[in-house]
Image (cartoon, rainbow, N blue to C red; front, side, top):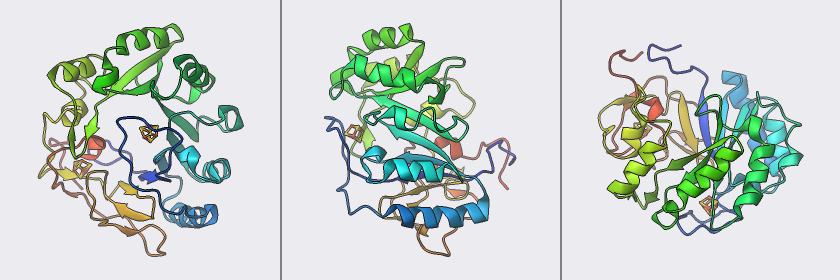
Length: 280
Ligand code: SF4
Ligand code: SF4
């Protein structure tokens, strides 16, 4: 373990496709390009496995299940890496659950109430319960976008999820390059967030109450975000493709943490080096 207790296992975000099966009113997706074939992804991930062993992949998009070859790719990837699927659950859960072990396959599901009836989503979430994140141990959780247009009904939804043993966790809304929540909404998010009062101050970063600018961050070293075309950024907010091309045979992560140049870190602040420990 490094001094700041972060795992040495490299983690990757993977924007598998920018296509989606839904059209949520708060969604802004880049234009979907032609999908890379399954074999291209597998060859690149085999190289990464050869260098780092089993890595952790946050597979996202868009909606990853909109990618042609989705089931085939997930099955093959979980043989060498752990796949955490960021999904709207609009796929056939029973095609991967329980076939794949929750040790190597995880499901981070988000409920989008304008696109799917609550009971339909809930039935799938319950089916995949052992694969959902344990943000409130021992309970499993699913996510909910804190869009002003649907915040009023959040308590009602939370109550229904709770009846089935699940916690509904609100995610702050991104509006363009900024936070899209007002003070009242921020208070409602904080009240239901597992990130409240944690040592890494993740909620303060999410709600723009703490700036990452100038802090050393391991995004780029222990974590990187692979865009749909294979170009790699150190994180969601950095869009300069500083880590090059994931499909290139010489692709590699940085060997050290580097200072952050952004003034807001809504998603990946867990990679900030904690001040009291120093970096190495
Ligand atoms: S499910 Fe996600 S990716 Fe799809 S439209 Fe909704 S917010 Fe966008
Ligand atoms: S925005 Fe966040 S994850 Fe990205 S470099 Fe800055 S602190 Fe790290």
